[in-house]
Each structure stands twice: as C-alpha cells, then as structure tokens.
Length: 412
Image 1 (tube, one colour):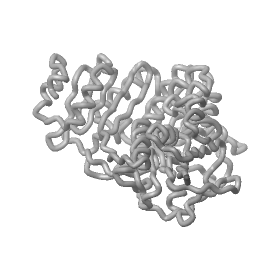
Image 2 (cartoon, helix red, strand yellow):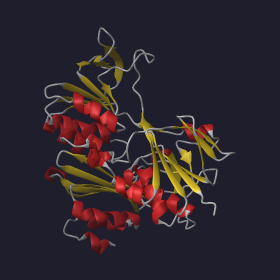
Image 3 (tube, rainbow, N blue to C red):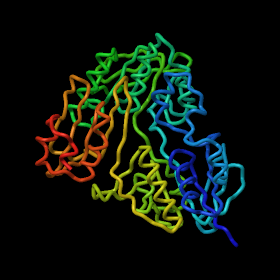
Image 4 (spheres, helix red, strand yellow):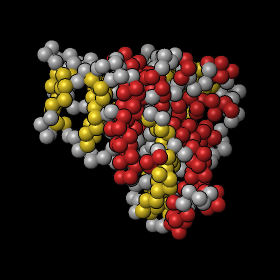
C-alpha cells in the first residue's frame, strides 16, 4: 500500500497542532514536521510575560511533551529550514540540500517582527535592540532586563505593554513610545485605551503617545542604540530598546511557489490555498470570515489552533469550514484582558462594570449588532460574552448589558 505523506512547514502552535490533529483524525500516512528552530513546538504567549519574570525552563513551554509526538509517529525535522516548494514534483528542498516528497503540504510559517528603520540598515543590528518572536529572542531580552537599566519600548500594542509591565516588575525604568494618540488604538475603544494608559502610568511607566521618531543615534562604536530623538525634539537616552511595531506574515515560500498572496497566503474556508493540495494556517494565512463578511489575517493562538484542526480535517476527508469568531488575551500586571471578535467599524460602545475598580467589559456594536467585546478581569463572564458576540446580540440589549444586576445568560 502506498501511504501518503503530509509535510508541515513551521513548528509553532499551528504546525504542532496540525500534526497531532492529523493523526488523531485517523491519518495513517507519514507526517513530517519541519521546524526551523531546534526542539519541539512551544508556547509563545509567555515569552512577553511569565517567561521574563521567572526562572522558567524552556521545557516548561512545550505545547506537548516529546512522548506525544513519538506516540503519534510524527517525524520532527528540527533545526532545519525549507528553502523551496516545488509544486510540479510535489517536493520541498531543505537547507541541508535534501528533498522531501509530499502529497499534502501545510504552510504554518507564522510572521516576523516589523523592523525598525536604522541609520545604517546594512550594518550589524545594535546589540541592545530587541524584537520578540521566538524563544531565542526572549532569552536575549531577558538577559538585558537588569534592575536599574533604562528600557525604551517602541510600540504601545500588546507586546509592548506586556513587556513593559514585566520589566517594571523587574526594576527597570521603562518608557513606552506610541506613535498614535492612544495605546491599543487599532483594537480597542478610547475608554479601554484610557484605562490601560492610566494603569501603566500609575505603576510608574513613562508613556508618550503621539510620539513619532525623528532619528536614532548609535553609540560611538556603532554597536548599540544610544538614544532616540522624537519629532518634538525630546532626546531619550536608553540602555535597552524593544521594537514592537507590528508583524509581517512569512509568505516568501508561498510567493516563490506561485500561490496567491495578499497580506498573507490566501486560503478558502477549508484553509486550502490556490493549490488545493497545499494548506496555510495561523499568522501567515488570510482567510474568509463568515462572521465579518471579509478576509482577515489573525495573529492569535486560538486562530492558529483552530485553523490547524480545519486543515487536518480537510486532509482526512472530513472537511468542515472555519467559522470561529476570533478571540485573544493579554496579561499585564494583575489584569487579564480577554477579547472576542473584531471591533473595527463599531458605532456604539457600552461599558459594563467600573474601570475604576479594574474590572469591566466593553461591548462593541455595529449596525445594531454586537460584533466584539473586551473583558478586563471578569473571567467568569467571558464565556458568556463570547456566546453573546457569536449570537450577534441586538443593540436593543445594550441597556441590559450595561446593568451588572442583569445576568448575561439571561440575554441569550
């Protein structure tokens, strides 16, 4: 019997979940998980939070123990990179010069951090300039987060604010620069942005909004960032810099192979690319959203895991469309922010609870339907909030949502 082979490119949440889901779904062929990093798939969210704060061993970050992959007969090609995809011969070329043939291919290459514009982009990157994508990045950053040092964070998004809270706890002097007029401006309402700005400033963070960079000055020997000057003339001298200014999907392999790419690898509702034998999942994929009636690309663990399962089901001959409403989370200090849905285009915000008590929810409506919600330190309500967003609750429920005396389950 000629058994089929599925190759998975990328050893993150999406890749690891796809491999295990294939086998759990009854796949009897060969599964090869090609990981550019050494080791097994691991959790990335802790890298900007708990990993920086504790003496965490890398093994504790593993998504699944090694025994799970061994038992499932999944081959791990660790510390090796796919250099090319050949759709004609249905093979991939690896960085060691070898090739692997495939019947189905899953691309789970994720995304890479957007780079900061430096005075001399051709020179070696400054030793004290950090990005945060993988474990090696986190280990290097952790080594620089020493008490008393000045840390300058460029970008007031989730990564920037999470690292800011961890660094402050570690005893650093932290400044956050946000080019927009408020933090988290692309994903939350002004009320939520104002809450998080107040939280960080009260904790001791220096937070500058509307802060656009004019120039970056390197040390005399050119090996480190010495200071950053803003458009208003402020010069900020620093010891350590973290750039958290967004991410770019890793689509190079797909583009070179002639697959459709548009802000990610274009896939259908079954995670198939323009080549039906090739799938793309996680941060690198651009998928159609039934809930929002448009294409979206998401950078989130739940999306990566759920798309991995959809691709596995399709390969196993049991296709089910990807219909999930996206959700995310962020841990800062003692606060847990849980988000469901996408709030872009909202026309009404309803607040439940009291931000001054550090526990509230913001509900986003568009065209009289609930499209998203942010939930701050109300974990017991989040499950019900997710259901309300998935149900596209009517705006007529807004007064009841704002009334903490009304149980959310009564609104379904």
